[in-house]
Figure 1 (tube, rainbow, N blue to C red):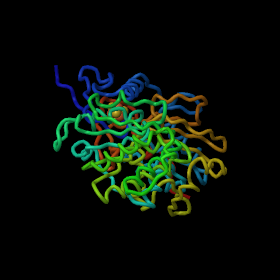
Figure 2 (cartoon, rainbow, N blue to C red; figure 1 turned 90 degrees about the horizontal axis):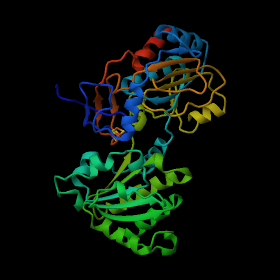
Figure 3 (cartoon, rainbow, N blue to C red; figure 1 turned 60 degrees about the horizontal axis):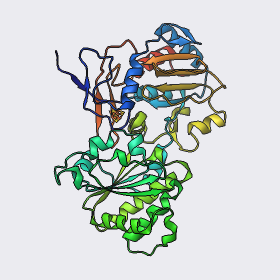
Figure 4 (cartoon, rainbow, N blue to C red; figure 1 turned 90 degrees about the vertical axis):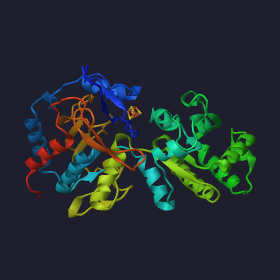
Length: 420
Ligand code: SF4
């Protein structure tokens, strides 16, 4: 029996690179994948549908011909989704320049980190640093567990080169009340649980910052958290030699999300006056870091952006896809999505053209649907990992006829002819 081939999972920003493909059956989910990864691999292996025009099966050429015919007379399409690999994002931007389109990634959460980091700056760290150096982790919210299922297994519950077994690490969880995450932590971890109302997170982090800084706080403002627990947490923060605050922007719901990120970055700055602390905003799922990286490499500005009138303008409010759709400014919706299954916004002001994951199911058929390869499953691709420091190559795990996003969009561009 030939040895298992290792591969890298594309289904969250951790990009776990220890998955083993069964050489006898590449349609089975690779070993070591978590439940989320397994579901996605198995779902993609179970479908084999052709492209469609108005719900009818057609060949790839006919689908691209139809998409080109619909787009040729239009002036301002919106290209959404963008959960693709690097080559796919390059092709999306080439299409955006050609069409004068607005481009926006499906995840709005990225802006929460981006704005706070633009305003205040932040000291961030990497998965390797956390694995090897962090003796204290503050886990804010429960996204590190729900959205990054193997974060603890791969990054925290491992021996550190510097200080030994994971039982030497201290972990503070700032959990939303009612969502106990203790079972997800290493069994022998030194654990302190501060259960909080999500809206109160910025206040609580502000209190911790003030206490570390020896400034007075009003203990009545700590909500459900007993003041003694806060004091214990502050003692742990002061004793840490390398502390890390971990959060997931998508997990910080509501209008308090940005405030929470600001409070965390302030807290880390204060802590660095006495010891070493860093931020780990977990991201990278659905290619959010990949899309933004390619956009900034190529244009110098972030997402969302408009490529109309031969130039590129970025504006997180004006060109956010919900705002563009609400103002009726888009005359076509092109949805390009090879990694995730986020809902496609309702759109009636023009044609909807979808380059989507092969297992996508529609309530209402789009005008054109081209099933595309998922990078790391049906085709090789490159994605930026969740700590933003490396771009990994994801090999294909099985042979497939599905075109990559880059191949499909190049075919569409060839058919569109020169820009008007
Ligand atoms: S944790 Fe993320 S990258 Fe790792 S196997 Fe699960 S879905 Fe894939």
